[in-house]
Length: 309
Length: 249
Image (cartoon, rainbow over all chains, first blue to last red):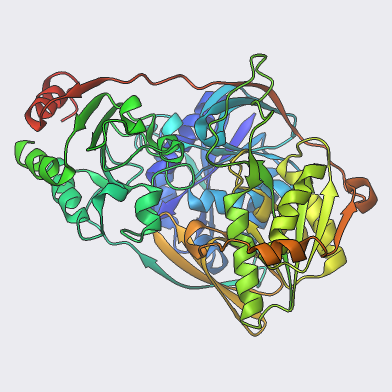
């Protein structure tokens, strides 16, 4: 049994989500190979070779794989997949974009966002916004799986010494082209990798008021997230959304400020180790999952909290 | 240009579902069903393309039970021109749905297919990408902006770090994210008119599509419950608990 992990990388570095995905592969068992596809990714491949537990790194370095266009990357993964028992990718927007395309080309159903491994062919995954957990068995010759990174503790980024092998194949479907991107610039930690997350909801009132959360986050070394309500109201961009259809986070500490706690939001954060809720409505459902609840006006409580931590 | 929109009948997003006692699934008896929210956004986007003169005809399709006619009628009331129901009694997996949609694409030859990025019941986020694979079309997933220009469509996508824009050759597949648009409500006259719009029913068999799946759900369980903790009285008490009890700051 050999498992192929499609690496997530950005700015010439292996993304943390790759380490959680290798951890899921290790739970399945067998040799682990990592595919690094992109342009000028020699450095990424070298870093990937150091990940604990990785036996081999395949590097496909070609202009066609820049920006991870699925029309080009999926045929590459399909070509390689035939020698593997499993193909795994993190359930990031990138993994979600590419892997179902791979699964359909292999004529198999994908198993999305697994949170645990029961055996080499059986996995658990949340459905209905995490209100139910399904145990799913796959009979596919090549099992195609995305991994919810919060379900698996990252393996060490250092300690391995895998061989690096070049894949010559160039697939350019010629159907899509990268035009541009606007990436959020922030000195704060990335939302899904942060140890502490401070999130705001509709109760923040407007986008400007998020400055209170940024100040608190900077004091704590935290990332800042938001509920769908806050995103829908236009307070903050969508890449800050935590929830069923946004990002899934499980930090050591999650501070929910002015968030009522709709099931769709809880789906994105209820696996956090410690949850704090600050809300003036003592009936808010968020208090049913919070370890520490504070019924207070957030505009008084948050600045005070910032001073005291 | 013809636009095909796929919609799914799912449990209403306000319903808190319960797992059945025999762990065979979730209990959907007497539960309110609706059009999947991301599919509403897909219908709205198609209607806006028609209002702009970009789309000439909107065909809406659903793969599902007989009752999915309700959601198709809703889409017709929102502005779709005609509807196709590929009737399947059992819940199909994404690949089977994508195969059925591929057969409809072959028949209808749309230039653009718009789907929701994810159904809020199975939470799979697969069908659009799979349809793109089977048709060989380009895909613009998690779209927050769609602009058709000549024989291309520019799609701005919600990605983890921000936004990415790609240019796709038509025909293409687009899956919707939340900020693409705000769906309208159907007006009463339009709901009445929708009853007279054509709705064709076919079967996967008639389309020559296999509904087999490599996935089998063995059981469905309730998640481990998280119990409520304590209410603190002040910010000072909160900080003390986080430092000394939870030890997280």
